[in-house]
Length: 103
Image (cartoon, rainbow, N blue to C red; front, side, top):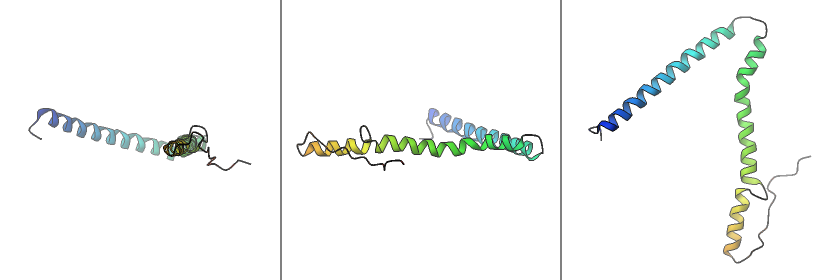
């Protein structure tokens, strides 16, 4: 496999890309960390804005999974339940509401 020129070129490109991304990420992260270590007006707000995307992603993922999997009308679980139900000859499958009602 390593005798193929295309494979060697792809491996070299992958190594160069990986090393470049890691180095740039390290330098940018270190630079931002050093800048935020200094005292300045609004430092807390800037830190909050930098960390906020890490807090939003799990919430967005949970909402996506909740609607993609558990929705009674178009969720994947009810789609699978409908498919299994039709295997046994019924055209009226149950539509289970998997999520508890919000109060």
